[in-house]
Amino acid sequence: MRTATMPGSMGHARLLPARDAFDYDYYRERLADPGLADAGAAVALFRIPLLAVPVGGERRGGYASFEQLVDAVQVRSLLHAVPDFPDLRIRWSPYRDTCHTVEWGAPGPRWWEGDEVFGRFYGYSAGAIGAFVRQRSPTPPSAGSGSSSPAAL
Image (spheres, rainbow, N blue to C red):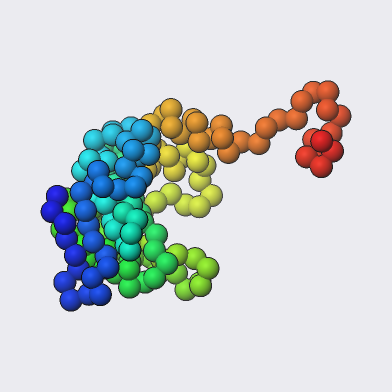
């Protein structure tokens, strides 16, 4: 992939090769199809390029979050030139404490769906989904503790 910048913009949003992304290895290790990480693009804003992973195989959609709406607009325009980023759209946030997102592919699961549903939708491997769910699950109290309250420990 060639480096691309947004023409006529402030020039701080750039696309770089996927392997230049700070989180490239993270996605390669967790995706059901690690090759999708290679087909993606590193989105560079300021100094830290982050991976945008395209749809394909089990991965039905994706997104990237941005604090500034202008950054989301620039990145959406840049991703139009990259294969397998269909139906690019911006989900604008009217709230100051919530990021704007650039989304692609099918609409994501509803917020109330379980972590397994999200993991499958975004194309993570069964092992990665299981590890994430185990990490987020509360630890059951031991049988002899007499209390399930963390304050009692």
